[in-house]
Image (cartoon, rainbow, N blue to C red):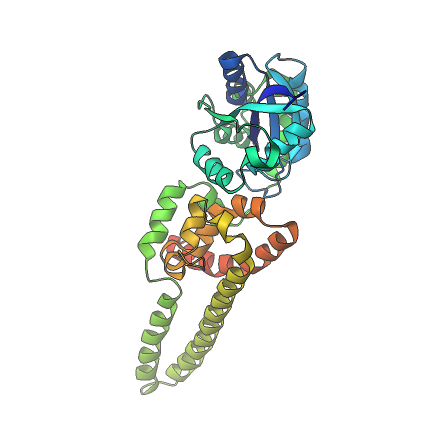
Length: 337
């Protein structure tokens, strides 16, 4: 496309943008001589992995633009969809040539590109993926901040961000998470998924087995003591609560199915979306039961956010809440946290 300046692009949430990211930009520049247009993705999740808001990210990145020849500029994007990212580039006078991404992100982007062709939609060639190296880790930077280790923070961050330490620390310190979210955030997701898979058919059904056995014991006790009558009363109260939870859970699954149907084609191109739906495009209850629905959605959240309309995404968050509550209560009990 005429009159567009060729650049490399680097989309990401950058929590935070560290020296590894800076070196990746230089590597891409050294590869083809084109500067990098950094595109930071809107953060609204705010947990221990994504604690920093857009303003702080922008504040840091703006300081880099005039300092390094290999950084062309920065821009903000709401959703990490390939066509959207490239459209923003074009609107700002740029044509992306290389797309910087970690090896764990490339497959996801490629699947999303199959849905909407950048060439057909925008009239430019698809950028070629440039696999970034793991020079540093955002997790390590955040850990240094948590440990009040300003020296290590400065070693891992661009010098232009050194005086922002207190702001990064303040935002990270403000994150308040439940024990279950802390566990999920601080645990290797592969291990957590293995734990969920090992649960297999326990799921909600396990509560009914426990209640059934306790009822038998309670009736036996009732023959010999008045305490047994009280126990029976408590157990039937538990049965009522468990049945209510199961109904609420199943109703939430049905609501999710209805809400996500219009988006299933795009979601099924993602790794976790493919676990969620059957070949017929309906919620795959056996997969949900095996993996744990909340774990699937935990992994799928960014893809759902990028595909759904803002209104439907808000509705999705309301629907998913009882599923999180029920499954996380079970998980917390299992893990004794």
